[in-house]
Amino acid sequence: MSKDQKEQPVFNLKKAKTMVGKTILIGLTYYDHKGKFIEQKQMHGKIISVDNKRGFEIELEGTRKGEQYHLPPDLSSFKPANPGEYHEHTTGEVIVNPDYLTTWIVNKPPPDFKPDST
Image (cartoon, rainbow, N blue to C red; front, side, top):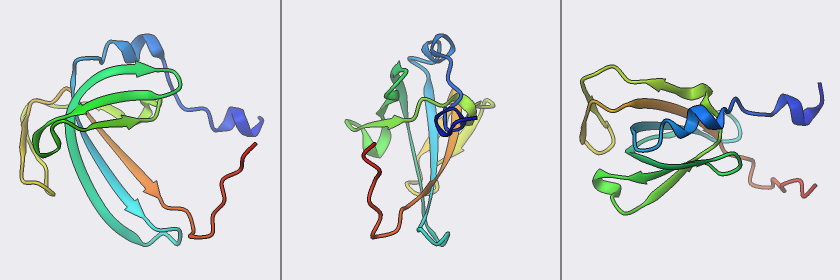
């Protein structure tokens, strides 16, 4: 398997388009380049568009109303949410009956990292 094949995310545009208009709760955990925990963030909003390259565009709500956020075109981390109240620990907001939950781990590159331009 080539490097490009191995890194391809799980994405089905037809399925992803059914998620437009749905509410999503996003959890992000950040680590530095050595694997040391930095912080956790949560946010929520409505999925307003999907695309093979740009992924999911979310119009944020609550304390981040007016902002937009993008998630990669990868369905593997999206899970249907059980009905109920979800509490954002970072803001104290309560989100009632979101449609989806997604969590991501973000590993920060080393300070001297230079992206490959190929």
